[in-house]
Length: 138
Length: 76
Image (cartoon, rainbow over all chains, first blue to last red; front, side, top):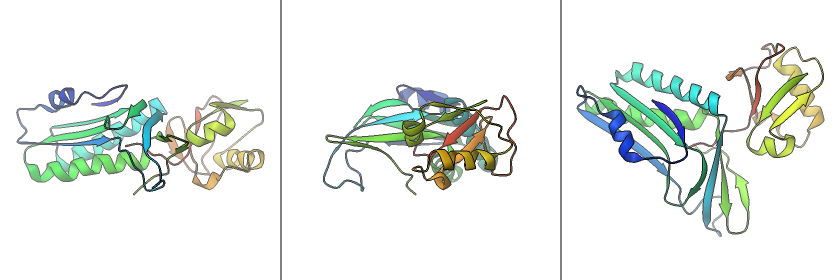
């Protein structure tokens, strides 16, 4: 399952990952933080995300399929929020369900790392006095 | 004429859809056109997608293709 949504419901994510074959479920949640290395003097007030929807979903599905194949996952989910997001809100969630925990952790990390490399989604950081498009971070 | 979608900081300069009224045969010719028209943008950092797939300079452009300018992504 890959989705772009206005609001991420973490309870829904657990339901999507439920699988009787799975012995381990690993979930990463990315949230809006109130600070950024680029502006040590100012607080982040909110972020705004925009996506090239159709291509973003296609890239997300490609990454999801790669992870399923590489780690033999039973379930894998990538959900990203778009629009305005306040400090503390979830903006991205990736999760996997596998037979054992050994596959779950690296698979989950792969999903978020690859998403950040190739999925056409952009965030703009808003401060009390300005805003700017964010450059990618490793 | 081809229509090019733009996103992120590129959209703020070009608008969300740019109409290009000239014949472009490949990605390289599109890059050359954009570089001349919009020299303030660092085009070497902007990827190009044709029909929702990342492409390289030698790849062809055909009438009716969906073309998009993808500045460095920052999801997550």
